[in-house]
Length: 97
Image (cartoon, rainbow, N blue to C red):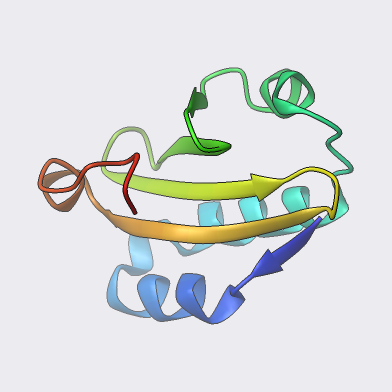
């Protein structure tokens, strides 16, 4: 899958170095993935949560951080829509980011 944009991940792990390895692993796994639908995403990430608008929510470093992406399966594109602390996540509407 093509991920837009890695710089978002990099900027975040520079500010939160405790999640750098997990974000790098997520990036490399998703880059190699070829998901055709949300069921295939869930096969690889069974703890991810799928919400409306082709969005998926990933818990990073346990439940310390949240990553929300929007996936276009037909074009194999994953857009990072939100990456933040759990406290930041509580302040947003995941369906709107």
